[in-house]
Length: 297
Image 1 (cartoon, rainbow, N blue to C red):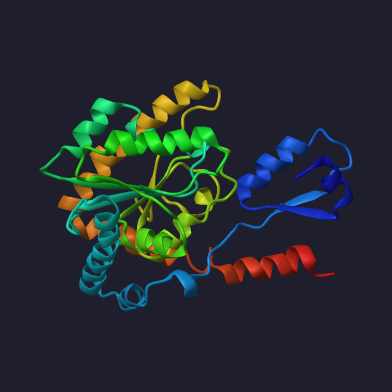
Image 2 (image 1 turned 135 degrees about the vertical axis):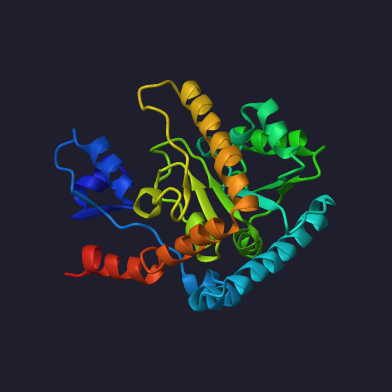
């Protein structure tokens, strides 16, 4: 928004409920501001869904659901092998962080405690595979440096990979082939976010900070995994440290053991996420709201 736009417009909209709260608070001291409502972003399920997964979810066929997820992981891992030479296994828990590279999205937060990160990825009893993908803006040199540093740091590890490019085809493979979709921006910086919606459509479980659209969707341990945010009054550095610790605690103490030891609980959360994401976060709802709330009359 600009101040002039908010004064001349009859109505404006934020792209999630939390974004609306933050936007109204940001602009409240300026006189003559128009109404700021909220219309949460959405994704086109028809475009993004995998038909076999959709059938398995609709028919409650957990055997087909599990086998199809492994097939989709294999498809993703072909790209991993082509780009990096690393051979991933469809039987291993796979965490994906994939989106635009920007500093506030904290692509490297899982690495903040390096020794703890190493313990996680060197756990052969309950192994983990991690994939990063995405693009920084061409002149965002901080994000470019972050992207390159992650490549350098994970290069020695056979179960970590960075994929280049993030066009529609690769984006779809990542969402369909992941077990966990990681999202850890700094609080109140993610206006909405939509990648986790398409991940949930394809039976990937969101692991997220409760920012953007997530508070409208997520129920911790029911349809997703939530990283508890640090207290607002703390410094950015302290928040990053605390939230990194909480992220690793969730992975180590909840996600990894559940994936390997409690497959029924894992499947329940996966199915709940796929069920809860549509129609609430499907593009038809969003288009109808824009017509009803913004454009009609």
